[in-house]
Length: 184
Image (cartoon, rainbow, N blue to C red; front, top):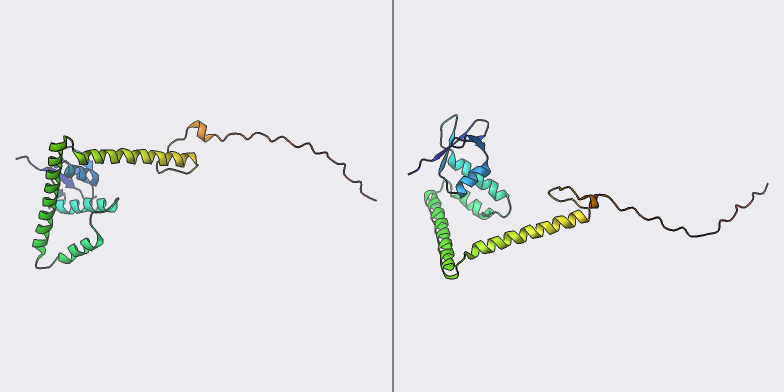
């Protein structure tokens, strides 16, 4: 059995990965979770295991981006569960339910892959990502073309920077009348 990677949290709130000898962010912690790397976060000052608290920070950060997984009602129910006589059962139930859901999802993907020969969700996810990138490119090009700004300011080609000079309009040939003489 492999030993857990040690992440130290310093009083300045920075996280230090002892295996890679570098400071890391919550995004890096998320990466460790996604790659199923076992780790433990230790508070440098108190030597307490604060892994759960860091994982909650990662969840909070993820919930603030894009579409959240947990609704307000769900979060309110979880909060109400604390201090309840059924608290330990609620946590266990949620954990088992999520595990069962993920296992069934993987089983379905494996069955479809064995019949069709490809992972359909992987293909759909890949197509969705390509479509998103194409749409994003079209939006950015439209914004650049029509003078708006994009979320990622990119240098504009010289052809788009310089405004074309207007051609001088030909003047109409009106006869200029001499000014009327003023009466003295």
